[in-house]
Image (cartoon, rainbow, N blue to C red):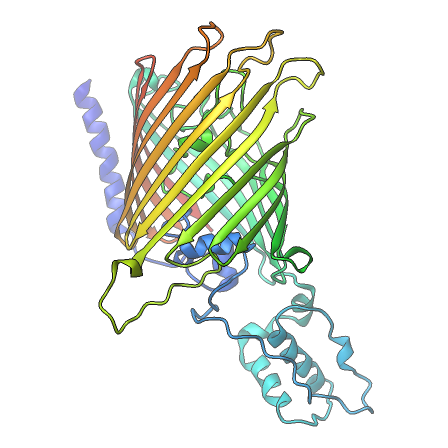
Length: 499
């Protein structure tokens, strides 16, 4: 029996290693890569994990900030040529070209419209502008799309994942030692309208989740159906203020990372995913209907706060987040200046981010007079980056004042404490190894039989390799020790592709 298991594992890893060795580099083609004509590594270390510029891109409503498409700093937009006027005898006026947006683009369009109508230019500067509009392929974009703010390239991408899992027979959900399946297929649509309103949507065409949390850290119900995971818009600099307004279905901005902003393929960060008691389904990470205000101050301070409308509840939940970054690229995508005339300094490559968050809400029956559970979550996150090394640390604390709201009497109060630390190192440009330690403790304030004190200790090792920028191979091993002396040992190998 042992020999058969060893042979199975050796054969399996032989296939994976062969795939790694035979693959050749290429460029990825998801929506943002197509729209901005850049590689996926512009915003990602290994997708879907974001790098510094990807984080700035996200915080700025999917607007390409900091540097232009060619990698250079954006030059200020040129004003429309004042001398490019049409003689009064022509039946075409520049007022026909309306709209806002990039002033440089619009000036070229206006000049091009005048030339197309046979108007005699009264000033020389207009002619080069028209010529530029013809010579530059990007400026060949139809005038109507530019003025209406509609993306010319349909900003849609698809992401699929296939996982293979193996582990202790007694702990695999269906009793198999070796399990494989197509886990999910999702459609993403994202972009911005004239750099004023950003939008994002994820439609889950199929998502297979196991009935318990053996494969995934978070306990999730079966979801083998189509569903909208996220769909929101964000008005950038709302009413000409530095504040952004986000509305729709999204993950409330709490920690430094979203659920999918991680190297690990299946295991989410424990401080965002744990639940308390058998009746509460609340997790800090879960998408909800939200109204959020967020802003970037002094380029390095990010603040967000909002209200959450949870289904079946009369009251609204509230949350807040604040984070500050020292060193590295700021939240506007600008990199720190490095003095090349001096010797290399550790501070030239060091970036440190610290953030904290809070969430308060309640769940239970919406019938008045029925006991409910009021829950609170607080946390502190830090991230240290130095060249190819990244260290993340998350700490959280929570209180649930009634873990059994369905009963007529108030249940016990439970305090939860959770920590997680992950070290990540980039061995090659497209090969990253990471290790994570996590600990969760849930303690009741009484000896009630409604709740048993609970603890979890977990170690997760991850190796991710990207032979192509839009194709990722990853392998993970999770060792989990529960307070009931149950041990889960589960290995997962997965392939993720985007197009």
